[in-house]
Length: 333
Image 1 (tube, rainbow, N blue to C red):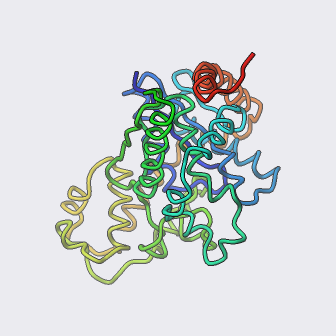
Image 2: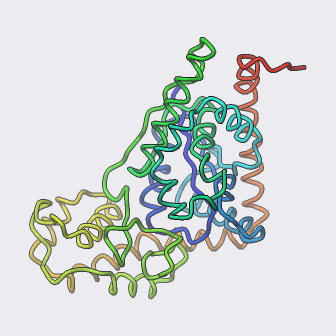
């Protein structure tokens, strides 16, 4: 059986990169896979300090964004990670399977911890093991990932292979990545070399899923570019990272490719392209934002969806974890 698992952190300020790089793709996957689990990964969120009330609110907002974008609770399992204990239990087992050298090679820890890594939490260091547990607690077979997450998925594959080797089994599948096309990695509107991020201190660096029409248009109008017109082909983008980013965003929103966008706008300046991009962004995002607001005004409804999803996820993981416990040698009732 092919089984999808994917998750997104509830750390506030969901933005266009989250939508184009993850959530929109989930909507498509539900048509291609019968078994999809989409998770708000709140255990991952607390690897850095989260204010408790804000974490709860952000968890609801993230779930609301999924549903508003078209991820259907009736067809998929939508839940928040902390409600299913299998994630934490299997992560500890994987802490004992994974090797320190593997984690030392994880570039994202170095980026997030910065120069003062001695003050980073153990959770931030070990969270790739939790990511592996998220997937393998359900024996997931496919995971949609951005380019920046490929290294963590490779670690999950290594952990699964080592567990299987250590315990003389073929129990865990070797997970396959699903990497999508245009706008899988949306960059900052202020710096084309940096990924669009909710942690960027400048709100103008990103388009938030809660931004109104005027704010979206203003941020695109002020997005950093260069004075040259758009080229007629992809080679012409070359080192023009800001131009390439805006063209990629247009391609992602229009559900086309960069070549088609350049065929339409090649030779034109950003004075013509930016208004077209703003109109497209507003057209695509406004219906999602309206539904998000409606759902956020009904927190009990969102909580109920997460609770029902967690019950289904727990039921799915229970027999898998029972077999893991047996393989490891835990004494069970």
